[in-house]
Amino acid sequence: MSPTARLLRLGGISTALLVSASLVLAGCSSSSAGSTTDSGVDAATATALTDFGSLADLEAAAKAEGKLNVIALPRDWANYGEILDLFASRYPEITIDEQSPDVSSAEEIQAAKTNEGLDTAPDVFDLGLAVALQNTAEFAPYKVETWDEIPDALKESTGLFVGDYGGYMSIGYDSSKFAAPKTLDDLLDPEYKAAVAINGDPTQAGAAFAAVGLATVQSDGTLDDFQPGIDFFSKLSKAGNMLKVDVTTATIASGETPVVFDWDYLNTTHAADNPAWKVEVLPGTGYAGYYNQAINKNAPHPAAARLWQEFLYSDDVQNLWLKGGARPARMQAMTDAGTIDATAAAALPEAPTETVVPTEAQSTAAGTLLGQNWAAAVQ
Image (spheres, rainbow, N blue to C red):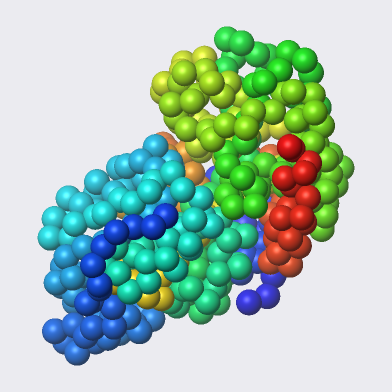
């Protein structure tokens, strides 16, 4: 996998993206992993739909397993609720176990390791890029049927992990309490005392990692060194403006976290609970990112895991990401084919003029730096 500089179309606006092909759960022992289907296919080693024969064959194998374990999929995150409900209605023979919806990307991996060999282990992951890059040994390679329509810059070349939906780092705020922040330094003003939060810990969560990335490039830094972003949040903390609270829909609705760094598609959804909630993508350099899908190499339900991947990259679900305000990986191909939801596409927030995404090397270096410096900077 080599990082490449590519011109992607995010929401119909060309932006230069530097992207890399960029909990203990109780349960019984698993008997599904590595088992063969009725047609003699070892679902755990299948790397493409053709290994099963057809989608109908894969569906039959997944129905025979009868279960799919997902983890870290909040129903109010990028329209996951509607996506999960569609899968359940389409495949009523497959029970979805929605585990630990609010854990971080790093905790997803830990859950898989802790529960390896159990029927309750996660079958699939939804991960920020930094965590995906650090854990490729935990994934099974798989290329969905629509593989060729996913930009090369969004997928690991063998299918170990694949970008699926994304957007831009933004600042959401309660406009009944605060004016719109127009620069990063506005958030250092005393009016934002004990008001500003990020979505998670940047050493573990993709959205929080990206918040530091945005602060870096908005502070005249580059993605080769996240220290300017760490320094900004250190200043925010010392000013008494930074909240050490895990952001949820409930904390925003209650006013506990009135100013939040998060992806634009997540921040936008909070207006449903607070009509005064507004979203600002800061002028200047923007920070874009995609979340990645991966299959647990030890998935207890390997056929269901692969069916889930095929489902997520179908036209129907790519349009559901779009309905949720996120930009799906196949957006350009679907636009060209006329299968995109044009109304949802037109409703997307305006993209920054200049946008960056870290390469594999930059993500790795940033993760190391955050591990060394973050806790002390914001204590």
